[in-house]
Image 1 (tube, one colour):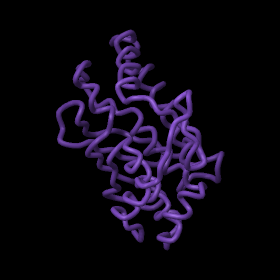
Image 2 (spheres, rainbow, N blue to C red):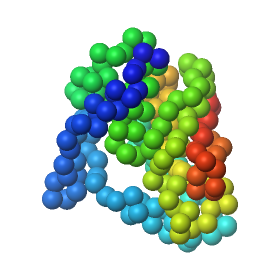
Image 3 (tube, rainbow, N blue to C red):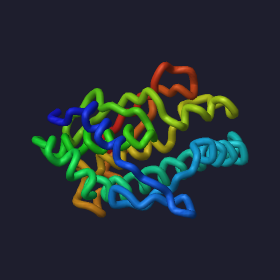
Image 4 (cartoon, rainbow, N blue to C red):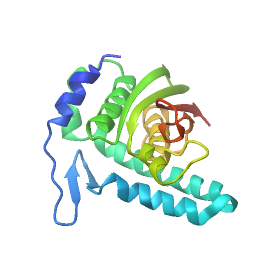
Length: 197
């Protein structure tokens, strides 16, 4: 890896972004919202509670799919943005691996999840360890029986799709991700394994 992860996160964190009157932020080539984490956790909790055990898998699949599609299209905007090119671009030596590491640096810098790739077999498999992510806080109000970081799970697969799938926008769904560990169920960190479908 050629990316200096710590330097990249520091530089990316210095970029000042501000939401408009509707809470929308135009940065990194994408439009994102500025809503508190508890809003999204409450949304997920309500969906899971209303689904019950009967429809849990359907809701889980829907949350994953939403995060996967969002991560794919938002990720594309991010890695093609001027901000990404100016900070991560000069560090890139190996394509697409360094871009992939850079995308996870953005995810960390924005405070969505403190992520780090711990294993990468180009085009085949990736393991991501996550120490902090907002979905881990759902355990405070809703007891999960299995890991439930749907946003991180979907994004991990999406980033691999961007790196090793067909050219955008045809590569979505090339990879899948499974969460093996989760802070929300008492593990010390989250672990996400991405493999080719």
